[in-house]
Image (cartoon, rainbow, N blue to C red; front, side, top):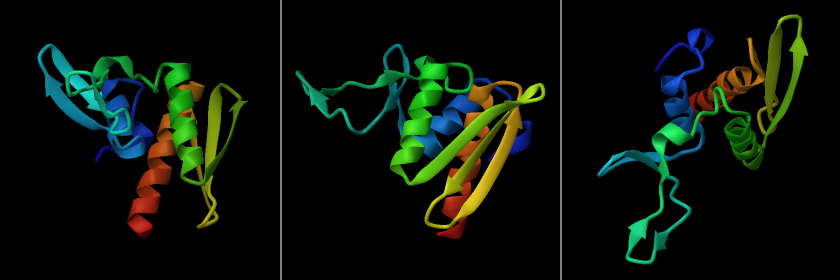
Amino acid sequence: MTDIDTMVAFLALDREIAEEVMKWKPVQYPGGVYWDEGEQGPIPGGKMSPRFSGSFKPSTDWAAAGEVLEKLKSMGVSLAYCPENDEWDCSFTDTPRSEHLCDYAPTAELAICRAALRAVRARKESA
């Protein structure tokens, strides 16, 4: 596990978000690694319809960061984020625990990803 405070927007962070927050599994197929989202089920021919691992970039892509926000919302974790000085402040409150977690980063996407990992890991540790 990587130290969240030092994580930069890149594939390693995106991978940790996919696995820990989104709960996707990496699957090796001919032509590359894909994320098995586990919700799409079989398509005609009995094959899964996974997403190419390189296409999910929540640490740099606003649409993908939005998917992370939706996932956290479905878990009962609320969010607030705003620009503060030259950085973004992103804070999550884990509703059942009333735990407040805050992260700062140069971009909203990176702040969201760091805070999301912190929230999921804190929940896992307290379970």
